[in-house]
Amino acid sequence: MAAHALLNTFRANKPAFGTWLTTGGFVHARSLARALIGTPQQQSWIMLDCEHGLLPLNPAGATEVIAAIHGVRDGPSALVRIPATGHGVGNGSEGVNWQIKYALDAGARGVLVPMVSTPAQAHEVVLSSRFPPVGRRGFGSPYTQENWDIQTAGEYLNEANESVVVLVQIETREGVQNVQAIAEVDGIDGLFIGPYDLSISLGYPPPSPDPHPQVEQVIQDILTVAHKAGKKCAMFCTSGTQAARRAAEGFDMINVTSDVGAMQSGLAAEFEAAASA
Image (tube, rainbow, N blue to C red):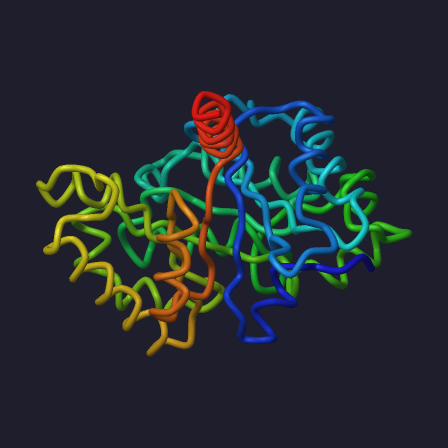
């Protein structure tokens, strides 16, 4: 099986730095995955943002983008943030279930579900992400194993439950109130903090660039709760400076930048240098 960079970094107890992918296309995704190969700063994961990005969640499109990432030798693990939020789980909505199915059947190494606010919702996410006997995920895609560099679907079935990373976002007032119970749900691998929606839901302005001090205290509390439960804690950052600080604080998984953010900041830096000549 090809290396699972995120899982390997977790097991080594090192900070897992990654990048947010907001735009599709095979070549674009491959270029992002190849960007840091062979450097000490190599990224562990790339998150396909199907919630707020321009990436549609469909089997053909997601499979192609994931193939571009996983086709890079010693490259990062491709993860998918689905568009459906945890709000509807358990209330008659099948959105979360089929979207997790699409993401994982496309070959994602992990899935991120936004706005999970209760342990019951978190448990439903786990059930949709794991094959029986610990879950209810359906089995049958003839393509998934190819994006894991596995020869047969049977081999993928044997690997998936132990290797798929299941993350839920804590970004609502109710999620904060229930964070300990959510962290204790068996099968949840980590809590991912979305500081923008978290700030808004708690009645504070969004980070600019850092969160309000009261929100920052909540963020630190979530980190403590996650680690006490033996789970990983992930944080969304928008710069390397922020990411370095979060790594020093003990966050296990940290977004450093996005494809669009890196492009814009890179252009700004190069044009500033050109104009100053």
